[in-house]
Length: 343
Image (cartoon, rainbow, N blue to C red):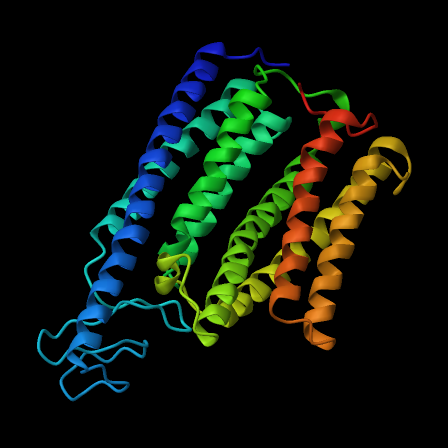
């Protein structure tokens, strides 16, 4: 068995630290974008209301890209909102562009940290909770950046990077684990298949969790507007409607559910090879199944029982809390055949 390369391990820790710093700055840039954009919208709408010149339709010569906005015939400026396709219009979003650029840089440095960790250990870098957290945080970021190429989800940047930073801090502070070889039960090609798919599914669940939380906030805002009450969170003006968020979260959860189903099946096959049985009611196995049941219930209830709106959002949130419980509490406080936390 190759010896551990502690020099590469130290480089990995340095890359993780630099990535966390870049994520923090990107998080601040996205937060500044939300605050600045919401203030711009309020100022434009206030000016239009004062002049009594708000129009529901866009006049000839105005930009046409399908998004909902208010057009000012004098200044040619428009109030920035998001349409059902997650598209934006309006004032320049320099802070958001800086946030995306920094996120790309952070992801590149983060990837270097994950890769050097794997090279130091001469294996795939997800053999314990520290490695699962750091690799999972990288996958969350990469998935977010990939989705940005198709849909403008920059409004999610603050929330996604906030979760990424929590995962990075949990890995560094809560689950610090020196580079080491795997226990015999994990020395299998099924580690690459089973855990990698679980990481991707968890990353997608993280995105839908952020969307579901925003959906609840946006639904409350829409209710307050209909009842004539003042808004609480102005930044929600640049967030798509609760219905748009729910629809996108549902589609992503459907993909994640397929991946989690494969994770469950691959785990059973691996268990049969490692321990001679497909299912043994180990705590980890039970909670993996619980997560599957919760998301299956979410998809079924929304598709056939009309569980839309806040009920669907809460089911999605409960499913993600089960994922977090399975990864943290079960790994740390429940003994079993899957006790590979490394802490």
